[in-house]
Length: 525
Image (cartoon, rainbow, N blue to C red):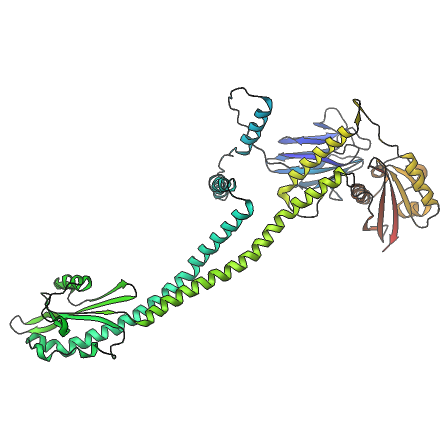
């Protein structure tokens, strides 16, 4: 939904809600929005609204229409655009529509009902959009975020953001660093497995004949024992029935450790007898098994005569696990320190507009400022600022009420006479406007510069008399800025009649905190 808010001129503060379709603005009573201000044509402007898009079209008005200081015939409007009409400046505001859900309720006191309605409006869910881009955004907003809102009801905003940031870092490091660490461990395990396979092949090469002939005294496995067998924690050489041949300390016993038992079952299947078993046993241990085969003359083929199982626990694997843990923790700590820095930026960028609003509310209530303004680009907080400005305006109106009658505002006259006295003793082009941006005084230098004659323009709006509507809109915008900042000097460069000039404007503010006149000078840049 679009609406127009008058931010300058006679209708300042008034709003025009634009319906879908065509909306006409003008002085005529049959216009959709009647703007009864001098200088505006009977049918001045048409704005066509189509869902989230709006188009403005000038209807051949006598004084023209300016959007953001440029005269237009037809243009697309967006949120924040300023439309300059004679004696009024309108700002385009896009408002997200909310569906109103009517529910039957048990009657309660009026205040409770208002609070309940406001809370229900906050919890309303828009229908899921049809486009592919809108669906994930809708799911994120109405499915995931309510869970986060629930946590926000129990935890402070800053603490919750810190927790979410830490979770993000942990997940990010886990998904990026752990695969690299896991791959490095796989390479190390592969190298250890190759060494184990060489040991098993050596046992096969040296002992297959002795095992076939049952010559147990000549079996050699001494290279698997002692300091030369680095990383070998234990080994067993046994026949297909599970009877142990080596080491000598386990001679003639039956294998009972889980890995050897599983390897024995595996090699009892004939199709598995040519395969090697490599298994990660956990605890930085790797198990390797191989079937030793010898030629059986009676059967005329190779048969399994023994099985060798070796369990490795090399120190390099323990070091790798320790280094991986260390690398993960270092990455987590480093990322955490960086996250603290970014959390500080996010935190202070978020609370700065809130602090700004708080201080400006105090300034407005004390009469040092007219309304809330901001130089910070924070689009989501604009509706809040507009609402607060409306509330502060109501408060001012109530404060100015005495005995049910509104006190009259100060007249411009005394202040304009003072500005005229300043003009009499000054040099250079000077223009004086009253509080309604109507021309009051203009000296000869200013007449020659801007092409406006005093005898024909005094008492008329600047927008009606200026040939360059962009020039008039610029002056009115600077006047509004000065009036909103207690008469602070405002300036802007502008090319007038082919000359580069600097427009200087100062508002003279009355006791009622409203601008009573504007003193405008033109200086060559």
